[in-house]
Length: 255
Image (cartoon, rainbow, N blue to C red; front, side):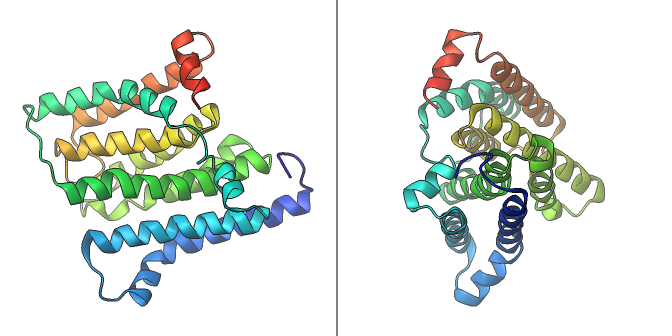
């Protein structure tokens, strides 16, 4: 079945299954890791957790929609091309990267384990869970409006970053910025219809943030916030204009 082929009862049932599994994975995957692998610590533990979360999501998609693995990847949009997403991501995050580089005096700190986890494993798993599973399946296949479909995963995504800082004002800033990011990633996904666009954006923003050690939490300093807001606006402008400019149409053709 494709979009609009479900009855109202089926939509409610499928949405309930998706959101129920989303809640369980989001809230209890860490507890599951403690039970299954009590001796694992550090980034290796978190890497295994990310892998298990993506695996559970893929299996859930296959069961809910009665798909094989390839069909499950297609439902999540993971079978789409990476090329356009990478080019788009580099272009729109370049101003942020330059801002971070200048602010750090072009000094960077390469820590392989930190970069692998925070800039590849974590963003990939988060986008598959929050955008591919909790947002896209409900928005694309169950005929739910964008704002309603994006609301819950974006809020949960924001509050998932709540304890990155003990200062209340910092916590509020982190939650607000990451919630906005959740809506932004969802919107980008909805327009390009390719999950690799938000994945690449998330990966690159995290990469520049960690490479130049911008801050101790997702908020960062004022300059970094402004740089990310510029990237957000720039990416929205390019996306809105994607049918007008030929070079942007290339990104879409690669999607």
